[in-house]
Length: 89
Image (cartoon, rainbow, N blue to C red; front, top):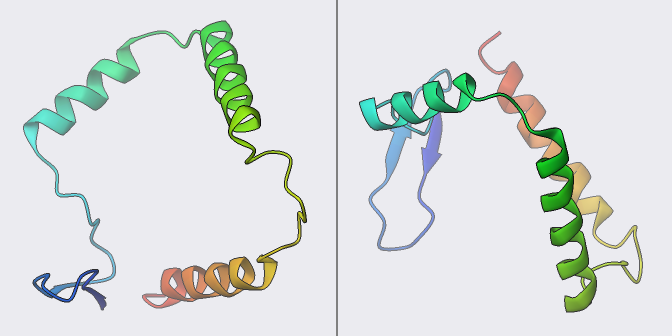
C-alpha cells in the first residue's frame, strides 16, 4: 500500500501498490495513441537534447562541481523504490 500526502493540506490518498498514480482517461489514452502513431524523429530528438544540454551549461548546472555529491541519497531512494516494487511479489 502506498500513501501519498505531499503537502500538509493535501488529502491523503491510499493506493494499492499495483495501481498507477496517474488515472487513465480518454484524453491521456488519445494522446498516447497519437504519440505511438507518429514515427520517431531521432534527429529532432538529438537537437532538443543538445539545446537542453546547452541551456543547463549556461545556467551553471552542468558540469557538476562534485559528481558524487548526493550519491548516498540517490542510493537510498533507489533502494526504497526497489523495495516498493518487490512488495507485491
